[in-house]
Length: 103
Image (cartoon, rainbow, N blue to C red; front, side):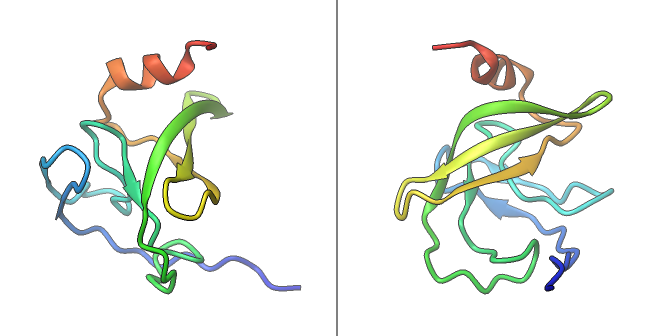
């Protein structure tokens, strides 16, 4: 049985969706834009940067993770793979609320 491995990468980047310059998070790995919540499909296991797709991960939903933590549900606009990331303390709450509205 293979266990997922987490490689800590907390780096800044320019969001390819909204263009915002994103700074490192400082307490865990930065894995999505706090402004528009988009991410990039770059990892097979968290932080490994081994995924070759490199498509934009579009936030499509939100789910309760534990206590006061939530996960953003993503769908890659290039390969359609679904993935999830834990919300960050500086995430745009208006965008998170939009994700929680049943459509």
